[in-house]
Image (cartoon, rainbow, N blue to C red):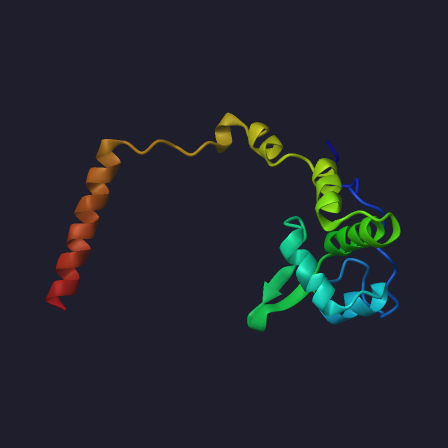
Length: 137
């Protein structure tokens, strides 16, 4: 498994826009820097679950450096090595750590505590008191 410092894919391309290397990039900035049209990037988001930029108001996309590195890898596989989208997705899935690996590493201290009957009884009493207070208001 890789450490947080070890990138799964090749380095992120250098953007010459004056922003920090770790800055978020818009879809337009990524498209222009990599020579990939924005509609292709949006389509790849549907085809590659690992590619999930941050979406803010108005569905505006912001790509993290690891998203850009993944786009570079997808572009390399599809346009330079001739993979189909399904084949490229399989290669990328094989490179990514399995989702259960993070669950298996969780310690017992991080487990969700079991709720006992006494606690539920107290919660029910609080809820009834709040309902009565709202009804009186």
